Image 1: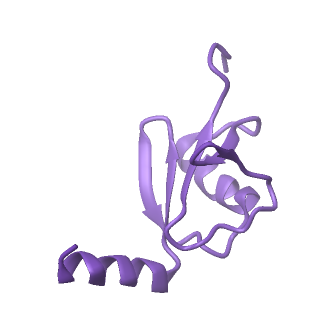
Image 2: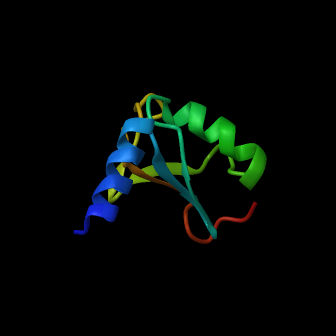
Length: 84
């Protein structure tokens, strides 16, 4: 990893940045320290994340009270085949 990449990663961690995804949307955001519920509320206005979408970190399903950590990759998913 280069110095530039190391500095970028360190800056994101220090500023509380985590990556949030839903469908085609993907954005690094200062949501570290917030719960999944708070992040959902923040991004549901922009991306129309439904209340029944499940949050994941990798393959791990996250509880609504999970506190997002710096550099986490949080993804919201609806079950395949669901309309809404």
